[in-house]
Image (cartoon, rainbow, N blue to C red; front, side, top):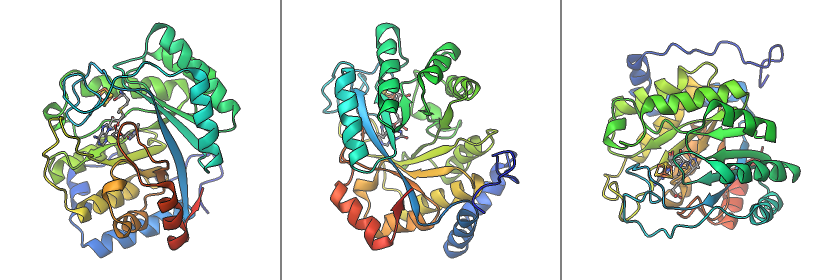
Length: 323
Ligand code: SAM
Ligand code: DTB
Ligand code: SF4
């Protein structure tokens, strides 16, 4: 019932979406859109199971890229103290704590344009050791060469997170130091190495609905779909160019989740950054719209995530359980 048994790849998935079709989904009455997304969700997943990942910043700040949303860029003046790459033992200790807290996947993020030299050797060791603790592993280290992706695979990496962030049309408003095509190239290297792809983006950066449709089209027209699709709501950080971005209508955020669910029915859609700024009712609507993964733990990379007690209580109140 939940996934097709034969070739492990669910049947009937589309990779040829047009933007006008996706915009038509966005424009549907809210109740119709959510009902349909929930129906599709139930065909592929246990509707009350939510995958739980914990995030750790293994190398913080000092990043040479100029992503307009990001507090870790050297181009901006956000209150983030740069730190060197963590020791392997510190990462393993954090992974153990995450597992005890109930996480099934441990995601490690580094503020790099791309990994290099001895640092790359150290992250390979982190992958091996964290996997040895019985957790799924995920890394986000910036751009990868094909050979680096293969070495991460050999070390046992399960997922690589690399986001498209927004539509190709809006992208130039946000980032100038890395092209959209470079992102697609890294994703191809990850896919070719046989690592699961975690790829999504950010909404609430001042993009239009047409941009949100175009961004989801880029994700959904990848074949196969990314296994994991993080939808982040912009966390506005003082000192970044997007600190003063306009509020996004919360229902528009829920619609984005629902459309992602309809376009990529068998992928995990992660209600990612921005939960700390949402109330419980809005998060519940996101789960109803088809979100089935979260980051659990009181910190994202440099910004706050909800308290773990609060999240445990939210799961209880909604009858959700970790997948
Ligand atoms: N440096 C690597 C890279 O960008 O390729 C990996 C780490 S980077 C922080 C991972 C992702 O976090 C970004 O692609 C972006 O989607 C998300 N992110 C960063 N800052 C954010 C913010 N203020 N609000 C929401 N999402 C954010
Ligand atoms: C993703 O899409 N969201 C996570 C993860 N991938 C690495 C990062 C969110 C970062 C939010 C801002 C911060 O804490 O620095
Ligand atoms: Fe650097 Fe990643 Fe932040 Fe961009 S999103 S500035 S690449 S850490």
